[in-house]
Length: 417
Image 1 (cartoon, rainbow, N blue to C red):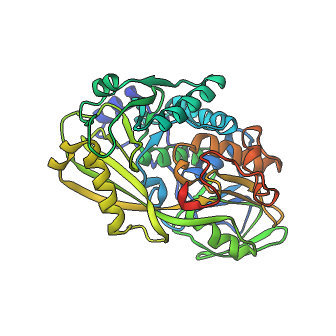
Image 2 (image 1 turned 135 degrees about the horizontal axis):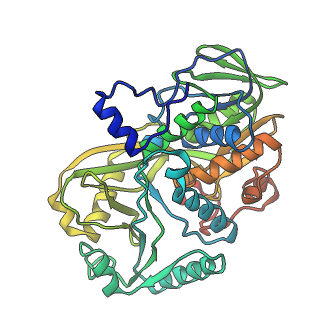
């Protein structure tokens, strides 16, 4: 049964009736013995893929198998930033398609995800960095994507908290994408789960996959018993290498913890997303008033969703160098997600050495912002067996062929991306 369409009129009607008419946003399901398609992972990319398979390709015999509850994995453990200010042309096109997806997300899925295009500002601290951002802005302009340079006075007007003349890395300007911003991460999972469920997809929570047996169909050993499927998509972020090993192959990814933090609530002081180019620090202010911020990945491989103290210190140091006034705030919470860092810093949306087994992984820092386009291209791949035009460069085979995507020029070191 459909959960019904949300609207202001319905909210008023339900309020007058004591809110007794609301149904579950999605319908809890138990795994059936066989599906046409099984998606392992109920995060943003898994749910978005299920939604597009059902809506765009008309395939509804689908199970999304999630080992926990929807929203308790990486989807609920990020800093909610969306943007498309990339450097290589294929990545610009892909991430701008994702940003366009965010721009129509609420209307398409009939869900308030608090999409806020407040702008993203990357700060410049050296002349070399200014040249790099100028090249990036020109590359974006060639693809018809917005980007603009902001001088130091403009930076101060946009973000009064920034200390332009800090002794460590003085601010020489900024690189602004006004269409960037933030989206409420929890709402994204709820919206896709609701929309996919209404289209007939089984959302199977608290069901982990503990074994994969190749064949046709593929057999998945789960905590709820065996499930077979004609095609299977792995969309499990940092745990992709673990599931790939179950299927008998290795992936060119490494898993790292990425920490995030939020402070106590204050009145509005930060109107856009700010990224510190001198140290790995980025921050925005939530609708509740807390400053949400994060930094680099921890310096060692880990599946832990807690992070380590050295990176806490590094992130705090960078934040206080850039915005000394933050020292007056208390940090309320800290958490971490697990990052599937690829060898060239770009995602892998591809078939695999196992027939009928597909992959959406290697999203690095870009997983959340990519969800609308990532779900679309993964759904296209699973439905048709061929890469979507937006994602042809994301094939797994690029690493064997030496055709890596040189987005950052950092070399084949996952931690560097």
